[in-house]
Structure formats: structure tokens, C-alpha cells
Amino acid sequence: MASYRFLEFELSEEDFTLSRRSQRIALEPKSLRVLTLLVNRAGHLVDKQELLESVWPNTFVEENTLTRTVGILRRELGDSSRDSKIIETVPTRGYRFIAPVEMLPGQAPNSLPEQNGNATAVLQSSPAVLPTDKPRTPKLRWLLPIACLILIAITPLWFRHHHLQAAPIRSLAVLPLNDLSPGTREEYFADGMTDELITEMARIPGLRIVSRTSVMQVKGTQKPLAQIARELNVDAVVEGSVVRSGDRVRITAQLIDTRSDKHLWAQSFEGPLGDVLTLQDDVAREIASQTRTVLTPAARAELSSAKHIDPEAHDAYLKGRYYWNKRTGDGLQQGSIYFQQAIEKDPAYAAAYSGLADCNSGLAWHGFVSPDEALPKAHSAALKAIELDPQSAEAHASLALLLDHRWDWPGSEAEFKRALQLDSQNANAHHWYGDYLSIKGRHDEALFQARQALELDPLNLMIGTWVALRYYLARRYDLAIEQSRKTLALDPNFAAAHLLLGDSYVQAGLHKQGLSELQLAARLSGGSPLYLAQVAVAQAVAGKQAEALRIVAQLQKTSRERYVSPYGFAQIYAALNNKEQTFKWLNAAYEDHAVWMSYLGVDPVFDRFRKDQRFQDLLLRVGLLP
Image (cartoon, rainbow, N blue to C red; front, side, top):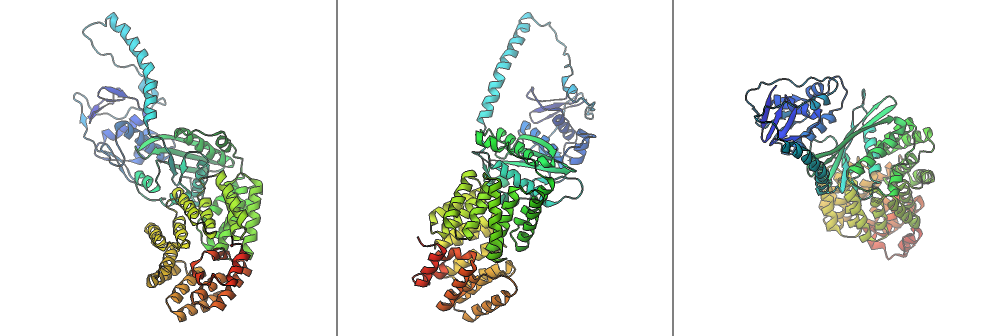
């Protein structure tokens, strides 16, 4: 049996102990076995699989168990994964012990202690008896019990003091869960489980939880956790995995304080697929406890209210949210189909009705289908969601957005306020409410809501773009340009950000730059009629009348095959200063109940017509006059 010294530590294979300056460090047997194997192979890469098979033979454990064990070792050794001096992580491969190791004289290296089914027996064996020149005096026999009593008395106080000194966790991100299910793995399941866990965590008062869209931006990246935490502006992260096998599911999660790189907690939760919502509530409650967050009675009741759910309905719901999050025409259509399937499997599934409402609202807003086709479906689905679950912030936000599209302004604002009362961390509710406030000309309030949404979802490209829209509609074009550039720094190919940047350039008098940005936006959007109309506006403002009219002809041809909003035609003719055609198309947009008519009171394109009585009449009919 060998003993080793590295830095200020000594590792004894014979006693199976780790000490620092002769003070023994309490470690669980598995952690000691991992450390011993790494030290034995100092300077050499030890593969993850070899570590798993050596330390956990004939046992199924997940890779994050090893990650957690190495994290515990680093914590006790004062090491850091960001700037390692002792245990180096070799990405996707394993670990390497890189600190200088000295074998103590008179001993030879040996293998790890064999497992005998009772690993703790190694630690509980009698200590070696050391030779002594003199018998122990009676005085020492009395001192030893007294010292033990003192140690017992002060240890809880030391731990309490140490615990209280740690900075409290005020903000947290649930990183995308890894799907470790056997066989074919489908992205929607792990992504959907991540989404639902974030929703559950958001119920914890006093703890800011980053929204789903932002955490998905770091999916699959190799960035260090500390960098991810800085980008998301959080104190800690939750990493984990999900395994689905037959009719059972297991969620494994670990909480990491990224400020100190400490693994604070890890646990697995397993149960039937039908009880997956209960498992997620269990995870949320445990994390709340580990972050020392005091749950209010209302929050505690919410986290205990999960009901059994039909596994097939839940699976269809997860697929629906996966496609809804794509925000494309095909994605929204496919999402609608899956939400409908979930409803057919479980007619009392409130979240599925809310998802169906969101898909139909999105189809109308983006101009993929006509308002007459989509909005009635969205309205009935949102009302049903609230009927089934009156306490669902998600359902109230869905109804608020739908009422906004239908020009029911008092109803819309009341529902937004109710959604935020139920869940102040619902980023979409802040995002959509900000849009409502811009439409109503309450620009400072709108910007406040937009910033709240961005704080909750800092990497969400659409929310970042809509902060620019808040500035644009307030005629603060310099700030709209600056914000659009910030969003494009995250994703240079995000079409909506190019659209806002181009529109802002045009209104700021930078016609050449605006046209260039809008043409790029149209290409990135795949030739969306909504985007092409803005290209024509820029051409008209720049005096390129013929080019603008060519796009009008192109859009009229497209309208014979698919829905094209009349509002876009009105914008083009307003930019051409053709008053009669402008009001012709605005009246058509009113009759069509075009969703974008909501912006009529604040859209800069129509500023030259605001004193016209016909324009005032339209504002009155849409409900946009004070």
C-alpha cells in the first residue's frame, strides 16, 4: 500500500484517508476511490468510462454522477474547473491529475481497495496502533472526552457560520437537460422537460429564473459554466438529465454555485410517466431548500398541486411546445396539430389549450393565415384553458395576447395584469404587455416591461428585437438602432432584428443603409410578405417608386395563393404619399381585422396622415383614441 503527497495533502491507500496538514478530510468512499485512481495515474488521462467501471462496477450510473464526484473533490482540494491546478478536465474524454505527486518513502503503490459490497467498512476499520515510549497518563484519559465534548459543541456552530457566510443565491438558470434515454433519443422530450422544470422553478418567490429561450441558446455549447452564468446573469445553474424507459422516467439534477464553482446538491427523482409533473415539483422544492429560499404557503401549495397526467397527452404536448418555439409557419401549424392531439387524449389538459391558443395567435400575427381563420380558434382555446385552470398565468397571458389582436383593449390589459399577478417571472407576459403599452402610446411603461422581459430572458432574440421596437415606436431611432445591433451580435442571421434595424435606419433618414438591411431581412425570412412590404416602404421613401410598385404587384400575385395582410399595402402607399390608395387599403385592413392594424396609432409610416379625418375615424373604430 502506498501513500502520496501532493501540494499540502497526503493520501494514504493503507488507511484509505485524505488529510491536509495532518487534518483528516471527510470524504465518501466513492470520492476517495476516484481520487486514488487519478493520483495513481498522475499526469495521464484517465477515461471517464474507466473511472465509472472501476469505481462503480456492475452498477448503472450516469456520467453526471462522476462529474458531481469530481466536483466534490475539487471543492475539498480548493481546486477550480475554470483554472485547474490539480484535476484537469479533458472535454468529452475524462480527467487528468496534474499536480506534482511525491510517493512517500518505504511504500509501494498498489491498486484501489477491492469493493466487497460494503464500501463503508473500509473507513470503519480499526486504526493502526502506533508504538509509544510511555503509557498514557490519567490526565490524558480525562482530556480526551472533554475535547470530544467541546468538538461536538462547536462543530454545528462552525458549520452554521460557514453556511451563513456563503452569498445567497438570488438568480438561477436551468440548463437544457440531457436525454439519456436508451434507444432513439428525440430532442423534443428533453427540451420539453427543461421547459416545464423552468416553469415550476419560476413559482419560487424571491428567486429569479431565466426563461427557456435564453437557456436553449447555450444548448450544446462547450462554454465553461462560469461564462454561461455571466451571459445569463445568474448566481447558480441547475444541470441534469432525463431518462425515459418504458412507462417510467427519472430526472437527475445538480445545483452548482457558479460564483465559487461548488456543487451544492445532487439528487435523482424517479416515478411513472403519468406523475412527471409531481417529480418536477419535487425537484423545484428541493432546489428551493438548497438555495435557502423560504416558500410561502401559496408557493408551497402550488408546488404540491400537480396532478396525474396521461403520458400520451403529455408527450404530444411536449411536441407541440417544441414546434411552437420554432416560430415558423410550418412549426406553428405542426404545433397546433400536436396540441390538438394532447387535448383529444386529455380533454382537461389546460396547458395544451393554452398552447393551441398561442399557435393560432402566432399564425395570425406573422401573417401565415388570415385573422378570420386563426383568431376565433385562439380565443376559444384560451378561454377553455382558463376555465380548466384559473390560476394559470400562461393561460391568462395567452388570452391577453388574443384580446390585443382582437382590439379588446380593456380586456387585454386586465388579462396581462392578472397573468403577471399570478407569475411575475413570465417573460412572455412582460414581453407581450410591453407591446400592448406601446400600441397605447404609453412608451415609458412599455420600455419598463420590455426590460423586465429581457432580464428574465436575456438571450431571447425576439425579446431583444422587441426592445428595439419599443424605441422605434417611441421615435427614439438611435436607441432602436443600438438595440438591434446588440441583438444581431448574438445572431447575425436573425431576420426580425435586421427588419427593425432597417426600419429604424429608414425613419432616421439613412435610406441606403435601411434598404440594405431590409433586403437582407427579406432574404433571411424566405420572402415573407410582411418583410417584402417593408422593403417596398424603404424604396418608396428613397424615391424609387417603380421598384416599390413592382413589389406591390408581386404581393398582389402572392395574395391569390396565400394570405397577404392589406396593412402592408397601406404602408407602401403611405410611403408613396398616395393618399387615396392608402385609405383604400387601410379600410380593407380594418374589414379584414388585420392584426397589425393595432399599431395604427403609433406606426411612423402614417405620420403624415394623422390629421386627416378619415384617419381619425379609423383610430376611433379600432379603439385607439383616448
